[in-house]
Length: 331
Ligand code: LMR
Image (cartoon, rainbow, N blue to C red; front, side, top):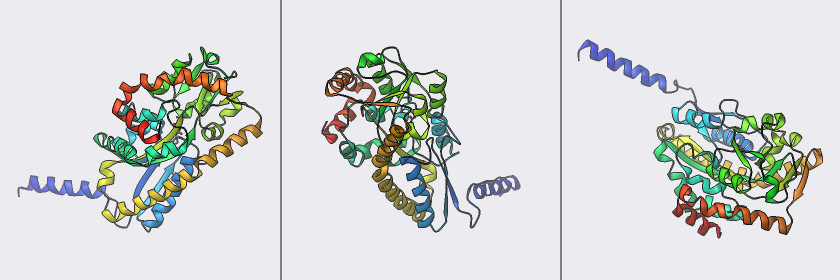
């Protein structure tokens, strides 16, 4: 081997060694997310950290960064693809900009009656097939984590669809959510989660939709005098990893992490509804927001305004995906 070649080979070996953890050092998994630790996602992530470290005897060090400490919504997906973080749990509404709008099926208004109908999708073959569509993007989907059903909030009461007319409503970056707000006559405004409370406070937007847990843990109730418990749509997550990172892990570590993920998923999904119920109770007790439950007549008017969004977005989501989700959930 010529000296120049030998140097090149040595340099490649050193570079390879530098990329691996030093002998005895744990493999680090940076897990970035945008919500508070005290939420269904925050608690499931903490449980995964604990179990992953236990089941690998400390060979893996999971570092959870909550509250957009590392990255905001859009940046975190870029960071995952670049390998700057290894694990995320973005909401299902945030995969469109990545080129996988299929997940926006979960954003459709009134698509799931309850958690049971949702789980028929996320825990079955339809959910698995959707996760597999991320592989093309260098991303592996590991699990679905629940948050819950959304409520609408604003600086004025929201009883009938006409009450939304002209309101600037913050949404996640989902075309389905854009269509939903437009169907109500509102003006949808895409905004990163970390900016919502301030934007509401400053009057840059008039309202928002979110789960009670997200609303409460960001203090949005302090700046939203009215909210309607509409449960008109679902908000949940896909836990995802950088495929290259995941595939290159030693088999025994990957198996231990899969076990930790399965248990963290069961735990997170078992507490999600309770966390949201507790957050709603806490916001009621705080007294800064007047909560309204839809009457039957109001609910019928919301459904009349919003159900057409389902078929209108079939092309965006994929007619096959929409049909499969409807069939699995009994919708
Ligand atoms: C939002 O942006 O409102 C949510 O996706 C935040 C989250 O991760 O629950």
